[in-house]
Image (spheres, rainbow, N blue to C red):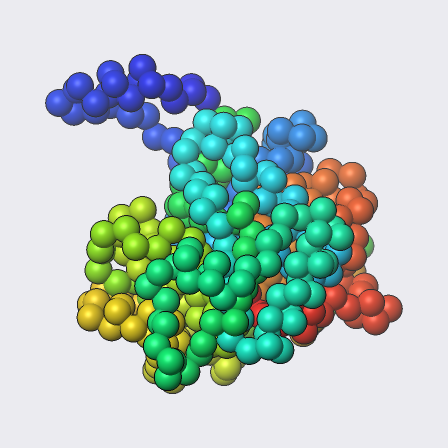
Length: 416
């Protein structure tokens, strides 16, 4: 893989017709690989990259039913943070945040990571108590967290609704200054380019239809492009993972929901932090292009379709306008939805399943994008060594047998 550098940018910029080479090959499947990764989103691409980089396993294929990065990786609102409550969650998401901090340099690809800060705003004394509890947990777990008074919140976001009759008055909040946003497409493309540089085959438009089994052990997959053999298979297909695992005779405790997002016309810079309202569940940020990007809670009806319903849209938009009434004059450019895979305790599933040689990384719910580096790093460790890293071990499927759940939605008071 040839590195990008300032000289190549200048050279290509001066050409009438730039001659950039494709960032990754259009690979054709080989008969067999050491490892197959099902799912060409961020987690699958990161897993293949870390298998090659950290463990020297380069004979790897990534199978994606469409173009890479067009699932949830390309449909989220790009927020990155680690302000969680339970130690297990903090360890997982802060590993991801630390990896994000150096990812542009590591991949030689600008992921446009902006550590502008993540602010949760409380509207009642009860919600302020939640902020206090989370701040204490973050400090105990070695993560940065700063409690803010109502005045400090107002100073950081001057457009906030300050009217005396405001429905959601500001009582204060909590700030994680290391949190921020990154360009979702760049994360997918950067991992794809880096994995391809190690010799990983990225096979697009290749749907997995079934598995090859011999004496109960996985030996490969049957795809729309034929049989491909491998003794180790990682599944990172988000909401499609339960469907694939069901073909192996096992059910996962996952339900799929639509999660909607919205973007307005671009305006001048007016919001330099990511803001989440604990009262409405609406979160909002301003993109590099000036667009106001926002979203909220899940559509409450399970679905596999990538579109949302009107009641959820009304809830999210009304929540935004309660926080920032001046945004009411903006035009809404587009709305979309992704299908998120939700586990009952709102924490992911990382680990082996009953079929030997098959490992899963799924159940991220609304937190998949922020966890891409850690999810790939930990699944690669699991596949390479056939044992958990201590960070991923609490998220094994076996926790539903032991009862040691990690109910992060209850612990932090939010589902995101």
